[in-house]
Image 1 (tube, helix red, strand yellow):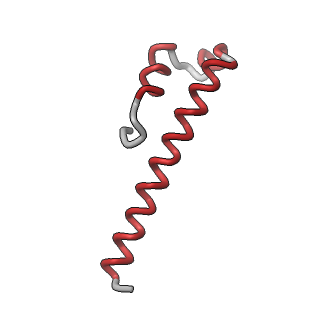
Image 2: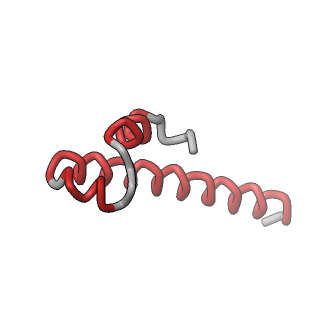
Length: 61
């Protein structure tokens, strides 16, 4: 495998892993806001901030 191909594959894996982590985090945040809304206050977020984060597509930071 050429160095360039390896670098591209590594970069793509890294991007996909980041997207997957964001998707998982936003899903968990949504579940927390539904099941235990008091925990949102405990982590210092407002309801509006949580809704904005949940609404983001997985590719956005």
